[in-house]
Image (cartoon, rainbow, N blue to C red; front, side, top):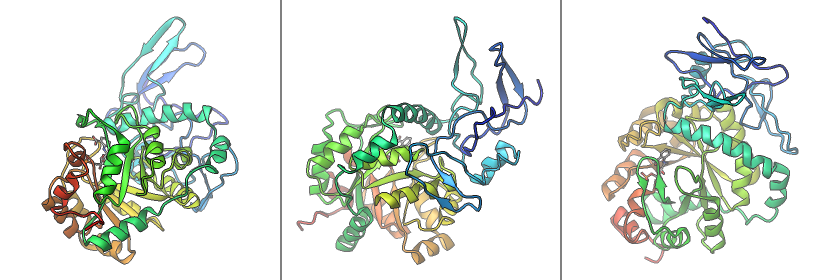
Length: 403
Ligand SMILES: O=C(O)c1ccccc1NCC(=O)[C@H](O)[C@H](O)COP(=O)(O)O
């Protein structure tokens, strides 16, 4: 069984650099298409025969060309290393992605006649919670896309509320208060902490955040892991809240950006641990076309360097939470802004958002001294009896515009 390689079937162009083999043992499942037999082997895998999640057209010289006039957006990331026969580990290293976009060996359950087989191996078992979220999201997006193709969304876009200036609101708040602008997160639950608030009324909470000085709001839309929804996003937007809204979603496909805009989003999140550089370039271009801001999130130096290597990034989030282990360390923000990186960010006037694990005025001033101009806060506000009033506690003073 040594050296079994799974190859893309003819005519399917495999171009998703988000799929990588585990670093250690490489157990592969190969499927005998005629007999339905699965064989486990070890070796250097080639790309799996799976569709690409991101909808993109990329020219050969890696400049991103966005074509959005058709539902039939295909993907062809030119520089993914896969077309050259490079191993997936090498391609992973080149792209700096740790999260595989979907199971290497396909869905974990298989029907053979009346039998269902589930063979767990490193290829079809998520390595961490973020990878699990992404694999589930991939299935979810493929399903919903079939019901609402891009052509339908494009029509719906005409009815979408006008876009609000997310970055402008952050800058205005920073200039007004002299403190990091607050992106207050409307977050009912999380994988790391479970349910954060039982009596969860998203519109009520959003209004309270706005009244008490939030510059922008972040609304979780993932249902399975955060108990959020696009209905919440839409309801907040329709309730007359003026703060620009970040759609806090795990974006892996351009379709999701159109959908978020239809539901009233003014900004979306792109997670560097999940998306190769070309996807980030392409997806930020889509955002530009739709007038949305893109908050590009990084967790370590490598991701920060990748993102700084991409032209035109205006908003970077440094997540103090490691999304693979849930460890939270606010000194992460400081570390990533030290030295040359901080210099480049200042020179380019990039707004940096300190994300996660901020509970006290000392925490806020710590990340402000490190160089952030905005903070993204969920748990420490939402768990308080009055999340709106909790804002003054977090900043050590009233930051509402009424003062
Ligand atoms: O919060 C989690 O447990 C989590 C798990 C997996 C992926 C993402 C996750 N959270 C997203 C965030 O980073 C936070 O919601 C956001 O930064 C606010 O953090 P906090 O103030 O600590 O609630």
